Image (cartoon, rainbow, N blue to C red; front, side, top):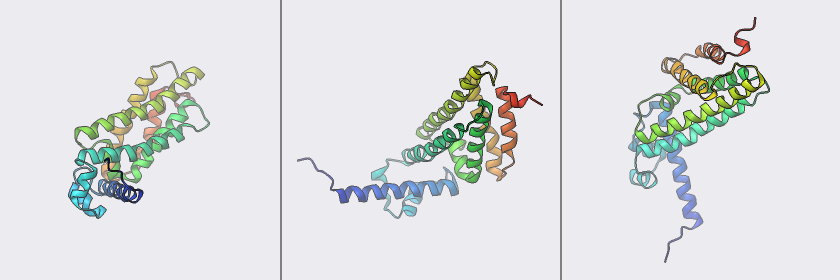
Length: 201
């Protein structure tokens, strides 16, 4: 006979999983990937360590799911930013500014998501989401090429370069707690696109 969980049991398990994920996010925001130990997550979530391992086989799998949740929200935020009614250059700048501003509000968490050395399953998630950010920008670049507001170019290459530059530029401000990189990053983005705002008087 197949065991079927009752709704009450499933609700308890779902609540435990949610508490574990919330605890992992909090520890990443405070201490980064290195400080997000399974025992610390269990203590923060108020569950036994054995219970934690019943939900996640290890730290890498736990943090990979945190990536899915947290970075998924960031992708949605930049998609919303890209929908601003403007030309392609300003839409891409809106994406970059949203990405950077949100990162700088939670610098330790953002550093863990962007650049901190992590285990292979988490690194694979990181690459997936970098491509998601790239695709949002590339779509706007292709639109700008069609409209004539940016010069002809390979949209995927430009978008990958902008995402890579944004991540690299932010590493310093995230580790030093500075917030003055957003304007420079925006100006760089327009120059990289060859957008008319970068050259018009």
